[in-house]
Image 1: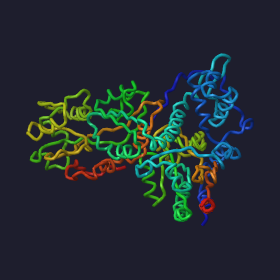
Image 2: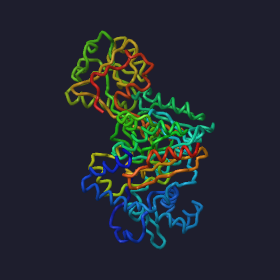
Image 3: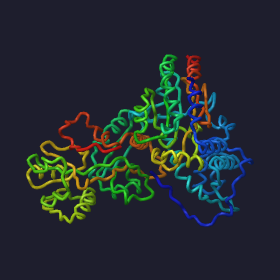
Length: 211
Length: 348
């Protein structure tokens, strides 16, 4: 099943209240403007270094020295769509590697949650803790969840303040970038409709073009 | 987690207009520059000076602020004729935006620090009763990655650590005593640590899995002679609740002095469960009730940290601090017999 189908199936399971809050969120984010504000094709990415789930500091420029880099921003494993995306990326990892690429997935979750997510979802991909959403901000994909959406997330039993170690309720717009060795963006999928995610096949295709 | 400092509330409703959704299309997300301009304006409370400071034109700054207000769904500043002030939303968002903006800069500087030899200091304070061993993996990673990493560690009481952080004499601390943390400090709870009793192997306690607090009544307690001894803050109320008067006959300021006293039969001592147990002694946790305290990471809020400090805080906040994980931190190479006994696994 393509990722798109899995995601639509998950969305079909939503109760009505979830749909309403989601609509409000998307309206607020103004889907049409999204790509304008975030980093886009041709932009140079800022350097960054973050801890990974194994407690090591991972630096973007060190990765880029080895080959193109896929950078995925996700909210956390509390989000079923993020889980589906992560698993799809994990399945695509051999193809990504074969095409000469590397992959990192960034989330604001702290306190060992990324390590636990990796174990639970049986992932091999490198998860980086974007503590306080600094890199998401630098990429232009950080936003503060509006009130109805905060309520919705809380109703799932998800406490973002505890997960993030701050009360800001800032999360990333789900986004996937492919960056060449010079740090230039060659593919950008930035989508506030968080049920929609980049297809791994598209990512691999871009990587093949870069090699 | 941080609590944003709230200024005066009160009836400022008059300027609190919201733009109708149809008037301005909201922007998707925050931009780093918008946040930077907001923070500068929040400090200067003057559009002209803020624009100069940010090296942009005033209209550009004004537009950026408006876009941020659209994104956040409300006004951040009241603009009156000669007066610019933060709204409630502005005051609420300020610490959050400071934090995120600092994180963005820190992530960039971190990457640079790996390549350069610039001095990257970290002045760290640990409460007297906290085991430095829990830091081993984090300190190891910082030393391995940041060439200019320069660590200085100090032992102090938790209140002294808070004071030093506020003064800028320390960059970060590990502390106990949640109740007294000043508001201007960020704090993140890392783990709960039980208090254990240290005794010689032939002592009656060594035959128990855990020691009921009530049994302390018959023991000679060795007191650690330091100001604000955190362990006493945990144990004394529990003993008092059971009507027990702790008999304190000997004291010492250094832990290894106390260990020798225990070995010499002068009495029993207390320790945190993650502190390595000296060879020749036995450690047992308390029950009826269990004695434990929270250990927190603390740092000054609103300060721009260098790569040594920022790297430390990120590594500490990102890692797993469940009891099992914390007990393992740095203990991979240590003699497992020397670890404090854990009777049951604490739930996550």
